[in-house]
Image 1 (spheres, rainbow, N blue to C red):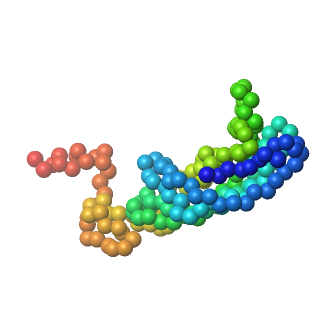
Image 2: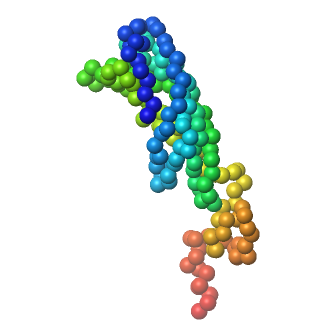
Image 3: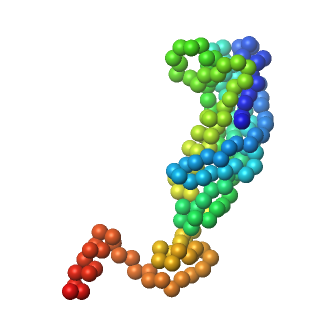
Length: 165
C-alpha cells in the first residue's frame, strides 16, 4: 500500500513535504489479462498544502510482468509515470476532489490508475513480434513453420466452397 503520513502537513497551510518510498502492489487485471509487479514500486512525491487541498505531484516507477498480445509470451515492462492528484479532507459533503480522513492518505488506487493508463494500447514483447501461427500455434519468433500462409478474407469464406459442387 502506498500511504502518506500527512499529520503535520495538513495542519500547516503553505508548507510542503517530500516523500520517497517503495511498496509492493497487488496483481491487477486489465482486459482479462493478469498484470504483476515483481518488484516494489518506487514513489518520489512532493505534497503541498494549499490551505484547502493537499496536492500530490511526482513520479512512480517500477516494473511489470505482462503477456504479449501477439505471441502470448511473458515479458518485463519498465515504467516511469507522472503522478498528480489533489486531495481534500473528508467533510461529509459532495466534493470534486479525492478525499482522505485521518493522518494517513492512501494513494494506492490513483497510483494503480496512473500506471494502467500509461500502458501501451497493444502489449508487445517487442515491436517486431511475429506472433503465433494461426494454424499450428507455434511462436513465430522462435520457429518457422510450413503452414499455409494464404489468408482468406473471413467475409468471403462462404464463397470458397461455391465452385466445388
